[in-house]
Length: 186
Image (tube, rainbow, N blue to C red; front, side, top):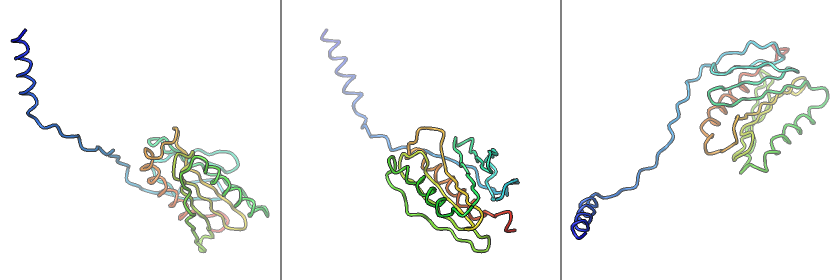
């Protein structure tokens, strides 16, 4: 028994000579495809450019869903004609943003977008935290057209995990607003 104790002690002392260091933090390395935009051939009262990694689904009432299959996300586009109800549409759009306040850590002040040449006026909101939608925008020409876009992921929201994808798609949503054209204004 004594020989076993001496052997175990020797192994223990010899094996403890290496200094144990903590492992460095690992960071998730995500690579997104480079962006190439093209105008969507839409039979709708509006048009805009999207990146070529998306797939679009036409829905009723001139609505559509722009899907990001590899990111498991979509931008849901809703369209409503203005029929003397612009104020109500703007209030409804803002209400839909602030419905996420329960789960959100913060809702940023809206980033305003104005392009008098194409008659596009809008706002973009970013919703920080574990809300169902992280980015929303609305755009209008103030007389005939109202468009709303909302980003959704097909998973339970965990903001820290999806933040890189949110930023990637947010740039696309800004590009949609920048290239938005109303069909009757051309």
